[in-house]
Image (cartoon, rainbow, N blue to C red; front, side, top):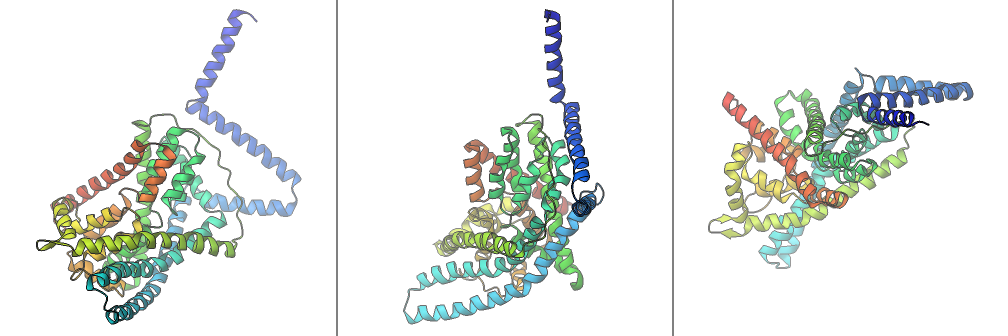
Length: 467
């Protein structure tokens, strides 16, 4: 081989490598992969029995519908809305029954404490602080989770979630992120910490960081009870009774879509600034549809998810209830520590359409998103004790008595969507990234976005005279 031939061959390889690293190269690669799968499909049709071909054709037709360019997203939105509608509709009565039972038991516990001459302050800490917080967590969170998780697990077991990832794949590519981020995002709906761990499937360190930083923008199961409860109280409250549940379900679904949209926008921003780079590609092979195994669905949804999340919430809610009760009952002058902290935060909170107690609830709720509402209830208390809430209507009346409007509710729901991850998720990010810098960045970025969003909405609404 002459020197000129060697140079031409080397130069040709370099050009081919450059082409493979650019958009045309990506299209070329996708073409090769598509050709391989087409050939495999032809071989399968020629060799596999007719009954199997019929089943495969049925799967193929269903995929044409669920991954359709025009119908895929409306179907996804309708299924999501259906899950929320079932959750909201089915959770009301069990929640009220559990609340009645727990607060009835509290009367007996108080009687036992009085009979044993237990000090008033100890009764306040254990019963009015810890027990009432736990009663709230169980009665309000358990019924929605016991409905939501089996529905979500059913979609997962049927094989629908990979279709959701397929629909979203091209958007992640356009955002400069890896297509596998759609899978890790789907995991985040169950638990953001689990979604962070799932980011291990992304080979590129840059794209893995993008996936970890943005996973918090999809609401996890710890935030769904808050979104569902507030959506039921206020969004459904302004609609005619027969349509209130449907309206609340649609609005919670819309919030989820806003979170997904924020994931794309922030991923694109990161890929163009602090985490620049060309997105990798991957081939997503859709698994076949499966018959749901209801035994496994119930076990995974009730034991692995509902009980696990509820147990974690109880573990962190108990000390949080204790701390909150102490902050609310230890007086400095004529005000409690909690009231002083809330008063200090009030001017800033007012600017973004919240109040100081709401911000304190989010701050004290850092251990887990599940306890933000219980802490808020503890803050809006009478004589340092959490009010007995025996229904969603009672919670609505409590919030209205403390100055809530439709704007307050909207802002709380948006801030629940856009704020720092819970303590477990932050710890997982620190462990997976090995960097304290990126862990702090993952906490600060969504919080700043949430504050900016609330500020713009609040000031715009007030300027227009709607609040």
